[in-house]
Amino acid sequence: MSKLVENLEILFGHPLTPEEAQALIKFQNFNEIDDSDPLLAVIVWAAKSHLILEEFPNRLQKEINYAIELNRSVLREQANVIAKDLILNIALGLEQSNKYRKFDMASHGVAFGAGILLTGILFILIYLLLHHQ
Image 1 (tube, rainbow, N blue to C red):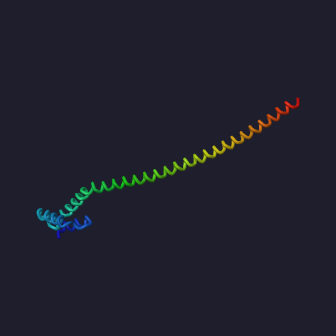
Image 2 (spheres, one colour; image 1 turned 120 degrees about the horizontal axis):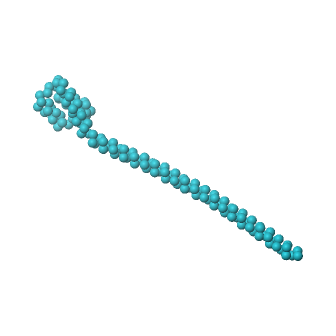
């Protein structure tokens, strides 16, 4: 096996396909590059740079999809929190409204009772005034 193929496999972290290995060996033989030639290091790094550029759109799309999904999940959680807070606020508002309504009903009851009492006292006074003359 060629040093170029070995170095690229180490650099990429996985074995090359037989077609890739054959193409690299063909390239090395065509350009008459010896396994001990320092030019191999340059070719290996150029191949790595080329691979990074080829993989960049896929990696970028993967990161974009991850960011979109993360944003969606955060928005869902925020919507849930806001909805729960809104429901709690409405419930508290209704509870306060019921307290005031109960208070209003009680004050109406007191006013009604006081009105009846005053009417009774007024009738008693009128009766006393009419019968004492």
